[in-house]
Length: 456
Image (cartoon, rainbow, N blue to C red; front, side, top):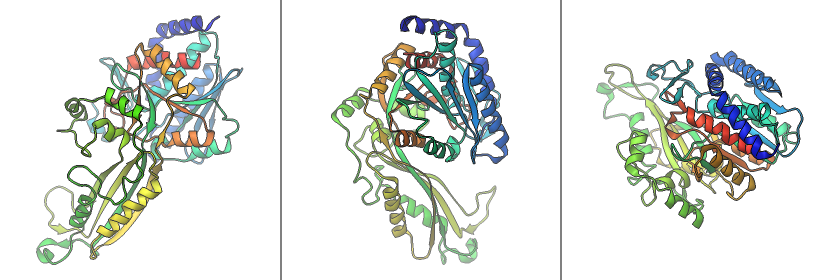
C-alpha cells in the first residue's frame, strides 16, 4: 500500500467514525481532572487510567506512570519502525470557576452550533485527542504507523507541577526522537491553520506591603497614618507609562529585534484593531506605542498586574485604613530576555519605589520559563506545515504565540529536538474561562492533519 492510499483510507475511516469519536471525546471531557484542586486528585487519576485504557484498546502499549504528583500517561506502538516522534499533551484542566457563569455544567459536555462545550474542550483534551484518533485511523485503516509514535501526556500542566520534567530528565535516552508535536496553541483565525514558531517566556511573583499591625479606623486615624492600599497602587502605577511602556530601567535592553522575514510576515498578518478589540471584549486595543498589535503580543515583553487586594472588600461599607495590601504581577518575555534578570530588575525597581513607611515582602517567582523561537526551516516544522495544509485544506501561516508553554522549553532543552507547535484551537475558544469550547470542524480536520504528519 503506497502512502497516498494509506492516507485516503485513514481519511475514510475518520469520516465513518465521526460520531463515535465525538462520543469518546465527551466521555474524556466528563472527567473533572483539575490538577490544582486537591479534592480532585482521584478524578485526575481516574482520567489518566481511562486515557491509558483507551490508548491500549487501539493496540498501543500504554501505562500510567505514577509520580510524586499526578500521573503521566505513556503509550507507544509495539512494532516500532521508522522515525520517532513524541506527541505531547496534558489531560489536566483548569478549575471551572466561576461555575455560575457557565451556561451548561463544565463537566457535562454538550454540542451546540458546531462546537463542543466543556472544561478542557480546547485546552488541551480536544487537541490531544485529535492525535489519538489519528493514530487509531492509521492503525485500523491506513495500514499501520510509518513512524514510531510515543504519546506523552501529563496531568500537571495547569498546576505547575514538575513531575514530567523529572521524568524526562530520568528517561532522556529512551525518549530520544526526531521531533516533538505539541497541540496546545491556536489557529491564526477560523479558516487559517498556523504553526507557532515562537513562544513568549514568563516570570510571575507577588508582593505585600505592610504599613501597620492592623487595619485602622479611617475617622480616628485618617490623614495621619499611611494607607497600604494607596501605597501599593502608587507603586504599580509607576511601573508603566501612559503609552503602555514599562518604566523599569533596563527592561527592554535585551529584546531581540525582528528579522526582515519576521517583519514581512507580521505585515502580511496585519490585524484589524477594531475587530481585535471586539473579540477581546475591550473598549479599545492598548499597548506600547509605536508597535502593532501582533508585535505587542508576539515580539514585545509585557508587564501586567494580575490581581490587587487589601483592606475590606465585602458587602457594604467598612471605613478602615488597610494595614497591608498585596499584588500579583506577571511579565511576558521575548528573546533574549532571561526570567532571572528581568525578575531582579522589576523587584529592585519596586523596592526603590517603596515608601519608607512600608515594609515590603516578595513571594515567588511562582512561574518562570524562558522565551523560545524555532527556525521555521526545520524539516519537521515544514512537515507540520504540509500536514496542516492537507488536513485543513488551507495554506497555513507562521505565527508566534503570546503565551508561554514551559514544557516546550523542557522538551527542547532535554531532548534537543525541534517542537512542532500545530494548534487546532481558536483564541475565541475561551480556554481558562467559563463556557470553554472546541470547534468540531477543527477537531476532525486536526485528526486528518495529524494523520498526514504521523503517517507521512
